[in-house]
Image (cartoon, rainbow, N blue to C red; front, side, top):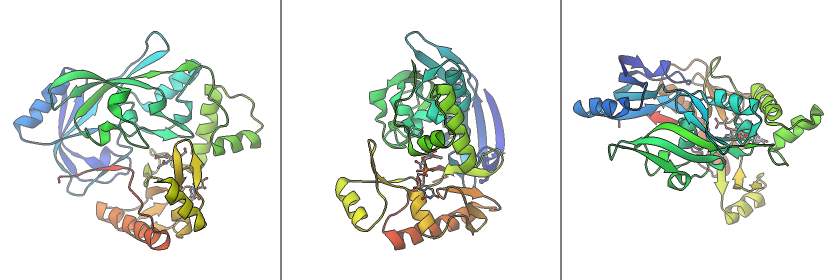
Length: 335
Ligand code: EPU
């Protein structure tokens, strides 16, 4: 267990905002998890579980508490096509590993920044796949009960960018490892629109996991900022999911509604673009010129800058279309 004091949250998160955290504890083996919670409890400090920091925003006043980071690594093929991944593995290394072995199920989730432990928390998804489709179980530490347990897919209650881990049981479980069920084979067709377009443009006929990984990597590289080069938290807003009646209403107004297996949605990127923000610089925050859902911290120096930019976007989209954009990244706060 490695304890550090007064670490800037800006240095632990890809949006690069946020003041000091009182303590950061890096967990190197499961037995250290209860020790870390005891350390926090003894000082009456709250705990925040952080991974790679790719979807987390810090506040200017930092965090008067203990940040836990999973540093446990390892990938193991269990029998029956199941693969067990320690939570501190970098997610894209996991995808690379499975694609190299011809396993399908997470190839479309290539290049998503973050740790494996975070994948089920927000049910990461892209290009038609999300982690709920292959998730089997997670070994966790239950901080409320003070025990280690295994949670199955029913326990997690997955939906779009949601699971029990970020809703009903938010902050309660420290994810030690996750187990996924992958198969030898290929993703079913039709693929997500942008993959189909890329395949046609480049006359690609190989749809193996490795090839889809190459395609997704190219699509992402052309649109999404690499968090190592540009400060960003990826999509800053969620897409808008609509009931059947809401979808009919939206269409009557001429808005593009996508009706898919996962429900009816309006792309928030489209709303932001139509509201005139694509490429705009607001309070040091750049609305990505290639994907309007993504905000890049170009020169913002405070959370307040981000909040001001967010407010301008959210308000204008609401005034123009009547939809409230919901933020995707979570925040570390003292509240
Ligand atoms: N669109 C626009 N203008 C834009 C961006 C998008 O009009 O500037 C419209 C277009 O119609 C486009 C459609 O939105 O065809 C979909 O865009 P895209 O495929 O880029 O996906 P997205 O809905 O903007 C979601 C995820 C991404 C994920 C992609 C690909 C969320 C919040 N975001 O974005 O996830 O990579 O789909 O599947 O669901 C992330 O969460 O950080 C993330 C990058």
